Image 1 (cartoon, rainbow, N blue to C red):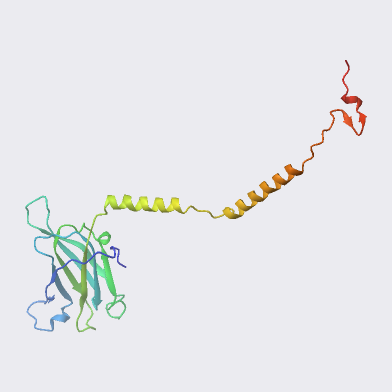
Image 2: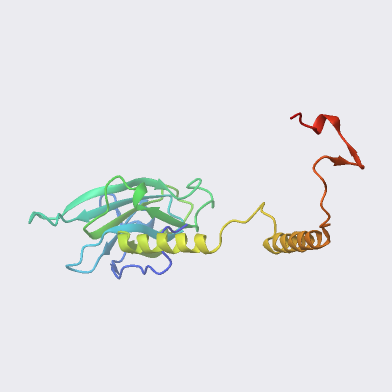
Length: 218
């Protein structure tokens, strides 16, 4: 699965014709040598920071990725380094499993930081003689881009505003129901106040008699 943003486009590059290595001066079918080298030349003068490499397998058992990197702070010649070594692409070189699957190699899987790359070399191996040929198809290289801090802050503020506008009301009573109940209570209070008797009750008068305990001695 790709980890690049949906709007990220692959880098333009040139793929050289695959070179099948031979042992000695043998004139046998070079596809049966078991090793193939594919060079991917990136745009001249535009080193690339690689995010990931994707491709479709075609009966390649293992792939090694080597990168030609140039140090932007030095004028020294670019140097080759191994980013991925013998990554298995097939369950078994002699069986079909994984022989035509799509693969993604992310920068986090690489042994070195794939930055300032001017060329990538894919070394393919297929030790089995069961297949007439092997290669990689639909090769794509996606550039690595640093996240924009301003955009991250903007996205955070947008999420915060959206949360403020739509608070979580789960578990709270319906506002309309609460409002209706308050209005009913207010109306009931008004009715009770209107019907309340205005007759005065004497302080010590209880059923026309005097309660002795309420009388004070002078």
